[in-house]
Length: 295
Image 1 (cartoon, rainbow, N blue to C red):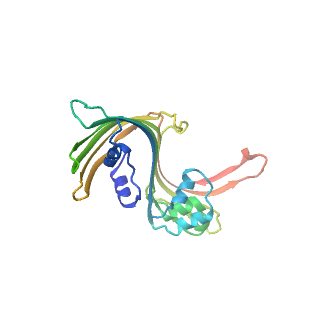
Image 2 (cartoon, rainbow, N blue to C red):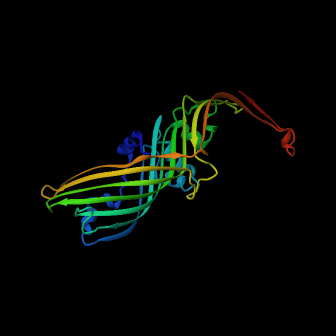
Image 3 (cartoon, helix red, strand yellow):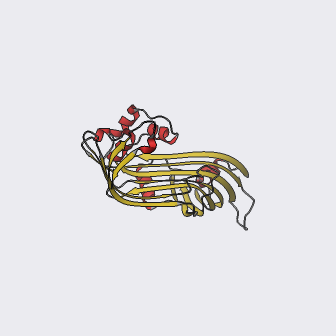
């Protein structure tokens, strides 16, 4: 679920790290009198060297993106670009008994979460080709190599335990959780050396494509879809020293997997072809049309 490349991307690009209330050592200290807590939460993390938050919001909500918003992004593009987004909505219940397994200072919790992740690595030509079309590439070759796009959504039920020990001056706060995951949808697209040449007068297109794509059941993609199952674990440790006003947090989040079912599909292509358009002899009888494609 969380790859090394994804973790490195958010380390350098994301302005907001996603956390849950139970893994924040300051959360419980702000409510020391609460034995039972019920709450909801929403978190959003986004990072890119070129994509703006406004553009990402319009794209994610499938709203119209005008040329002005496209131009802002296009002017920031480099040869290689990166983009990533995480969104989470959750509801949780926690209870702090007098003791748990003969240990004091413990709290157990259960949480339901809706999670979405998107990340991509892409060339400037890939973006411009997708959002402007190939008109601006007349007489030129667009480089669409090394495109890597991945998105998935899943639901999560998590159970965990936290414990706080120590004095007011020195506090240790630790916890662990285990989750069952329901895979909703998954899409992964990558390209090797690939390009698209548009003839100056648009008389033909030459495409060289090396593509790999994996996708979960394309007919069932809403929240109720059950396209995979998996599990994950979380762990964190926090130490705070009030005398020096210092704090150390170490943790692992969402370490796990989702196995997608047999209705998932995989496509691999390594081809070149020329597209010369469609010949239509009779606009009212398209069944007699000839598609001129040379492989």
